[in-house]
Each structure stands twice: as structure tokens, then as C-alpha cells.
Length: 78
Image (spheres, rainbow, N blue to C red):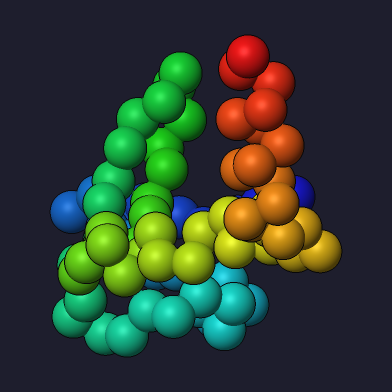
């Protein structure tokens, strides 16, 4: 459930402290503002999408030997 805030006369909103404590956002940093199906979404602006994506999915290979997996998959091609 969200936190109720007021829109100021210049259409400014303050991000509540309870939410600020959960995300790595500092004063004067840029954010992305999106409208999706009538909802306003505020996202931290990534300085580098490469850094953001680095390591994504690393748990997918946990407990799997990549070399034996590839050999098994290639054997199924025949």
C-alpha cells in the first residue's frame, strides 16, 4: 500500500522518508517519471544500465555446471 502525499502548487511531491530509506536516492539526483495505465511511476535514474543489469540472472546457473549443460543440450541437437 502506498503513502498518501499532497501535490504542491507547482505539481511537486515529497517522497516520504519511509520510502526514501528503502531506495538508494540522494538529493538532486535525477529520477524517471512514467505514466503507465493512468498511474504515475517514479523510478531512480540509472547512471549506467550496464551496471544495473550486471549480475542479473546469476542465480539461474546456481548448482548447474555450464559445460555439462551445454554438452547435454548439444547432444539433443542430433
